[in-house]
Image (cartoon, rainbow, N blue to C red):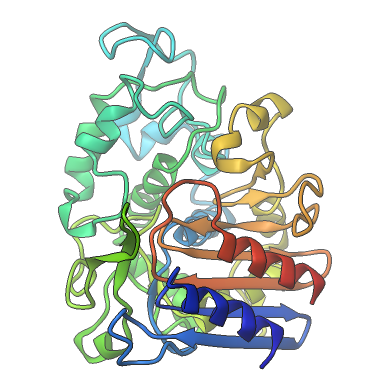
Length: 382
């Protein structure tokens, strides 16, 4: 048994997860291990072909879609989003983050494409989830956790968002999640295609990501995992079965957390980024767009205010960027993100390293669980 296999088996045996798949690559050397099963009944083994809800690993994919439009010359980072999202052309901002939603002032400037990509548009989750301008993101927009069949279609979703004030002025603060959903709507409106159509044409088909999408076709449900959450008293309880929320296309394809995928599909996307946007001789992204995606855009003050999610990391486009070696697995320049369904995917452009972990138990907080940390520790040493 390899050390990677042992790590995964250990957490399966503890009952932390029913199953998990891990991939660690450096250059052309690739190690993949799978342990456990796709559900707690333990009737079907977890394999590298298992399909998993990747949650917020969707964010880098959506950001890459935006950057294809930048490369096409259809949009620019400094463009105001109101051209395509007129609902947000003249946003209001709460006077202070703790102010009630009716105590507002006009935004000092328009929200830009770059604000969305860096998650600094003024919408999203801070450390204090109970702030008056934050709670409607849960109650009206179903921002978390991902339940795709409950979310209204993009036009209605955006109309609801337009009635919620910004928590901060555009560009002032990093806030989590909402900007990635806005990126998905932006892609659709600029391209004139649905987000699933655009992603399939510009990223998934060229990369051979045949199992990645916003729903699982009926003929692949036998490879789809069940989703669980920890019970307060111990053990796991079912959140979503293979024939549940992801068995049919949602009205709102969430660019923030709606995708399902496999470890090899996620690896194909990672390899494209490491190859500076090229796959099989075909360029999907420019090297400059990849560089911008994987560069930290936050100020030290913005990083310091976002420790609940970032733990001192910076933020690129759609994913975090390690700015210093805080832990053994933090490598300056490491880019990627975690998903609230128990997933994580990172690349290190300077070394060509890739680490991908897919499991099927929801995280109970933004702090990565022990399984992820042990997996990253192994990946840093491999």
